[in-house]
Image 1 (tube, rainbow, N blue to C red):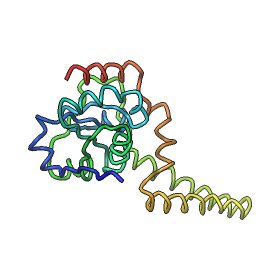
Image 2: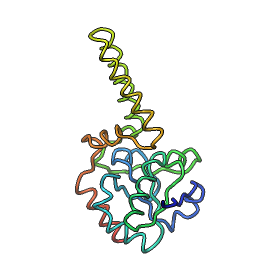
Image 3: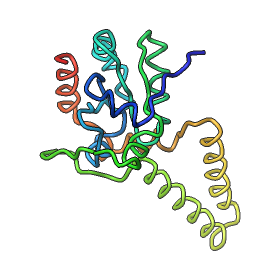
Length: 192
């Protein structure tokens, strides 16, 4: 099992000038505020970006970030399986901002800022639970199984530190990167 290198927000701040920061959140989340200088490569695009990330890791340390640290930990593990050593930011951009550190917001961005993935999951899960309860009350009691299924999924998500609902929501159009945006990011990463 690979040991993850984790940097606390204050450590990352001190070394920001020497790190290549890759933000694995969706483009909408990234547009809502990101660590200064971070490059947006969504988690589901890591395979496509592997050669550029490998090159950046050979030139210096790569820090992978997300909203809370869970997706970036998954990204670091995935990259480690490919022989690329990276570090993750403890607590993600949430911890970064909570410690009073600056978040950049794109001046001209074709991507509208959307809710964080955590917020999207909470809205979807809560809506499905309410729907299951309402349908179970007014249509057929079997619909309550929908609420039970969502509750089970949330427990599994917490125990496994993964989230299938987030993976599904990331595929929605407002969370998807435009191909040209990722191409520009990869070109910039190659040039670092």
